[in-house]
Image (cartoon, rainbow, N blue to C red; front, side, top):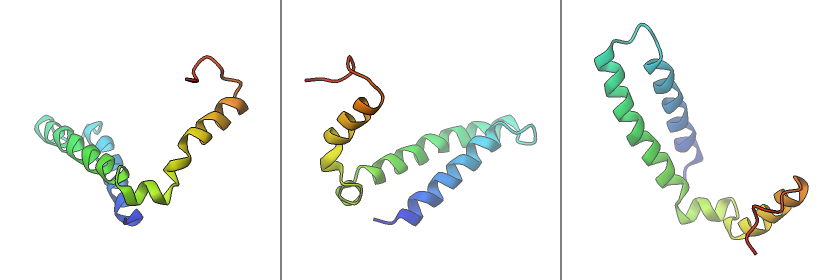
Length: 81
């Protein structure tokens, strides 16, 4: 897993979002960037779903983390039992 690559893709994604909202960028370029944005999002999500990344963030403990967050925020109705 390469966190630097994920981070760089996120930075590129943020630039693409900003560029599509720029008055300097013409409509055809903005449309191209919007299409590319879908691909970059897919790439980032795919990288975050790898076994290696899940091990890095200790995903096996996700249920426990959800329960702790709910307890800290007094959320009861959203928890499945």
